[in-house]
Image (cartoon, rainbow, N blue to C red; front, side, top):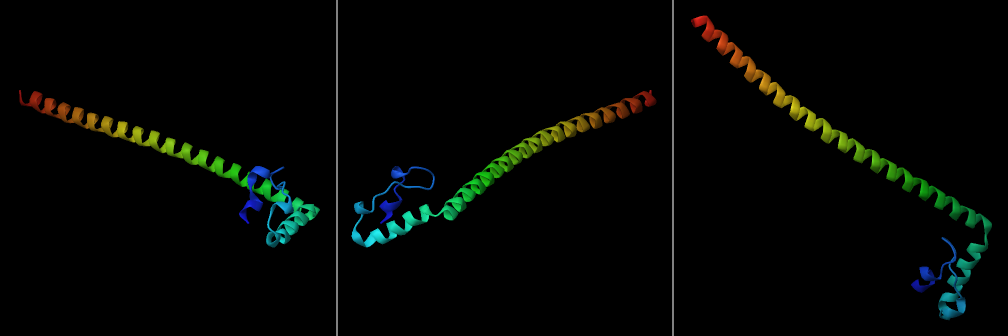
Length: 109
């Protein structure tokens, strides 16, 4: 029964090129119903609209992924900058301690 949906026989995104005679008699009713559905313009339009919606959602998902990647990259850069600032603060504190110690030693002399 799943061979009805064999994608190697498709004509477009929604239309499969199938022959009901290629299937056992018990499945032919299903094949006929599917073929009638394709002939209905409203169903065809609905499927086309669904394709457009799915494509738009996929595009938005891709853009969201790109934005998340960008945010993660910025977070990494900020983290590196924070580390650099912390290291510079530490170096400044060490210099301040050295200056205070040198002042104290000069004051003792």
